[in-house]
Amino acid sequence: MQSPETEYTEILASDPGDEVFVDYGDYLRRTGRLNDALLITLRGLSHTPDNSRGRLLLARLYFELGFTPFAVREIRELQAEYPQRKFLRQLLLKLAPDEKLKEVSDSPVQPEPASKSSSETFAEGEFDFEALEDLEHKEQKP
Image 1 (tube, helix red, strand yellow):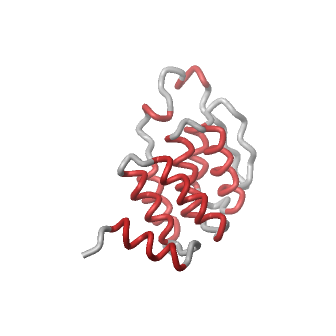
Image 2 (tube, rainbow, N blue to C red):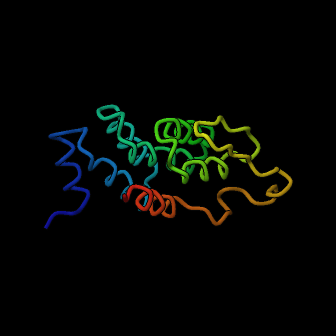
């Protein structure tokens, strides 16, 4: 029986843009190999740049590697593409609470005042990407 990593690499060797790059990148992230996960995710997105799951993973990797402005940029691009996804607005509010967010929907979104959350950073908060994935799946159901 092959390891998950071997299966992922074999699939990606024959088709670098196969959606399995997202699962492989997340597998690497969960095992603490953030730089490898970033490389796999960037390589996969270079072949399939419209893969929203891959872009969400990229944002997460950027955040976990300390590149929050890049994570914000990715989430903003996803929000512009999918303005109906409320979880993306929630994530932006957590990632960039002091910035005025560009509106891409009909209803305005106001960031929390900095004084309200100055002692709590996103990493310390109760907000995580797994919750986002759950919200995303719920919003996709008719």
